[in-house]
Image (cartoon, rainbow, N blue to C red; front, side, top):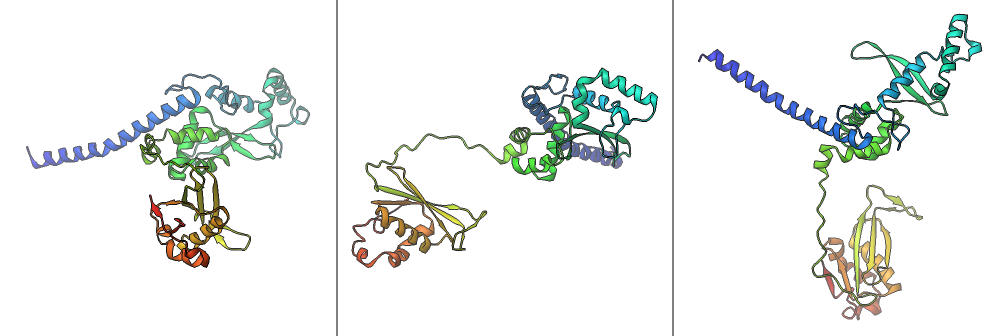
Length: 326
């Protein structure tokens, strides 16, 4: 075999290897489309089941979408405000007679002419002139109405490209301003069946409870404390101080909980909050926390906030002496 033949075979093998991921990705998209259409609209992958949806009147079947476009094309001319003219305002006897007959024959479709508009636009990629259906709201805002077989593509473009596999709210937020008949439930179903999101958000298998559950027989036998991270949404208190953490404490027996907003995740703030609350409700026998530094290093900070008459009872008050780490 000559060197030219071997090089051509190598190039052909490289081209084939490059096409494999593209083919695999196309199969994944086709499978995702089939699952979404089946669950959202009870349609098969070929979209040849054209039944009117009963659960959401906004969804348009391909036949209904085509019918609306055909009716609006012959409904008559429009005025300067973008509304269809009344019969008395139409100039030309022949045109007025034709529109009158059409509207009389399709009286049930009057609501379509009231709520929908059909406008022409130029496709940027091909330069061809096409028509687009809009839904007009009560305040005059126009949003694109699409048939069922285009819902998957619209959500896919917003979820995969515009928002980079963001959550339901961000994806729906980029859609609802431009499109009318795509609901939040449709977006949630798309994300739920998205292969990339399924791989990223792996569902943790539920395990049975603890083999040795914690037992408490009385109030204040065990207090469980933890910190909730609120740095993504800090809030100011009435004093103007920014609070970034929430300290939660729960009595294990009565399930009584109290919360306290903290500015920082530091032992002195945790100790001060604990002392204020424990001075009212009493100190626990067992102080149950994780091994965070804000809890493990709280002892020296707590001595500064505990009153002098309590320092001699540190051995009696296990809040400071019997400190258990989970």
